[in-house]
Image (cartoon, rainbow, N blue to C red):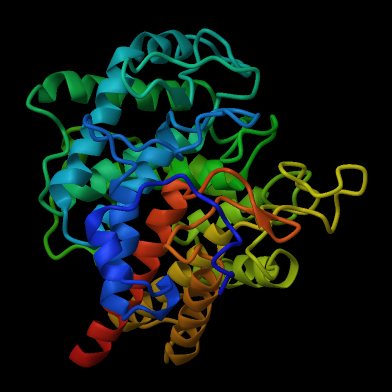
Length: 418
């Protein structure tokens, strides 16, 4: 565990968190209290409209301010609510995303008319960063054309509807039109073949994680049986958003062409873990290959580097390889995917049966992320030379820890039932 003075934070601890800690370090708490403390920290970043700021950092010490909305961050940050049973908050967050997409829907319809690469900050691109109150776009020079945002949105809204939760607001007709405009935008801008800026807002390149995200979103709404094993009852959502089989076929072929690499310049990247969780859009053999590459090449002491030579918060930009920032989020993500492999084996039977080894790995990486959390139970964005940056906690990393802990609990519950 980090020493108590390793991180000074201005974050105000809630009364419930103080009561849970009672002078103890986070890692000393019982499992249930760890979950409570971690979730309360995440709740501290939730805004009145249901969104989550990326972190508390306001930019007063240099660099970009992070106390704003990133669309991807909101969707991943609110994932924790599902895993603690707070579906009302999860749905509120996704309805906020619907509002934002509706606000900039003209960009989708404009972009759908362009049969070419849209560029970083073109007028036809919905920006990834949004003001948390006005919902106005925050302009920047880095790349906003990020296809995985749309894939995640399509996938999770379909997933929630199939679980019986009405994510689509009362004005269902308008939302259905928005969804169809989104699919048209993706297909006419050649999501399966043209470059984007990916999960890390860098590029442009063709990214396997972006292709996989969109393929998962379209597959969810295509409803051809691929995801049927996940649901107790089958709700025919394809009648609301028809997705042609051709889109699935070209996407699958494009993903197979790109894998096992993330892109031409990156043989592996932790963003590829999204192909296993939340999407599980790849065969078991490809999942094992991706995990093996990440464990062999990207896992470090304080976290997982995003990809070799990553310059973001690099300790020595003149010699970037070996000096990359280490992300605790990667530990949580590896724990989640190992739990997912075990759950899938318990549900359907697979090459992972029996799942004991994968449960052990899920436990290992959960302990690793806890070892680099602060004494208060916060998950930093990253470490450089053993020190965290200012984004403490990072909202979606905090969420991933909660998901990892609850996902492992689900594995144990299923083991009892089998």
